[in-house]
Length: 343
Image (tube, rainbow, N blue to C red; front, side, top):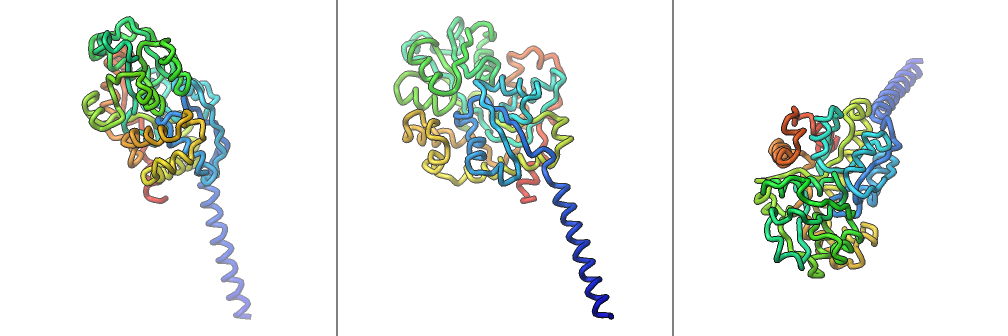
């Protein structure tokens, strides 16, 4: 009889323990496993961590079914989030600042790029006329899309010379073969874009570089230090209502950053879709090597980086000059800290 009681007690404890673990698992399960993610120019190295997260299966590993919608530029992916057709965006940190002033709070949850990785270059034939940012007045400048981070980057640079955004003609050229073709055809006088587009144009001798934010040295020269670039951002209320989903999103991206830290350019080139190589795999690997310094090491947007980004934008953004921005609300670091600790 005693043996039977001991057995029942042990079995009962095991059952209670199993229920407890099941409760923990249920509590940590993603509230919204099916997600739509917006991005503007997925093939650009600016968004390489997103492509790696997708291709390496890290979303699925976290129990997430992510549908990626690729737009022509970051402004359109932001619109998809605000409009409700996207749940999450891989985009520029600057959007978290600008939307706060507009009363539509969004927050970054992990930093993917600590430098913008953007390059301003002029068409080689125009280099004799355009020698400084001020000389861009009246020029046709290609960006990924009007209102995108490449547009902000241009506005900040010409703002240093006293020019206004309206002093140049902005033309959206995307971030792939269309951008390369726009320079080669002479549709634009200058371009702000990223790798592999810039490396392709540089290799072909089509451009002369004026400003380069792919390296720490370049960012020190342009902005005085680190300037957060690509991040993963969501609406503040989504984060509050879906903390487990948000954590799993961050876990997936954090794992990609760690993989990227150790991967060779050849491994990266093999992982991304072949069409991202722009027809030249060797060139793509060179572009990867040139852009490597820009990727975040720890996924954290630093306070200094927040200030640098804000200072860049107020050069030309009247809303930010007159509005109130709480920088601490533009980045929620709880999730990346958990991901780094291994949960």
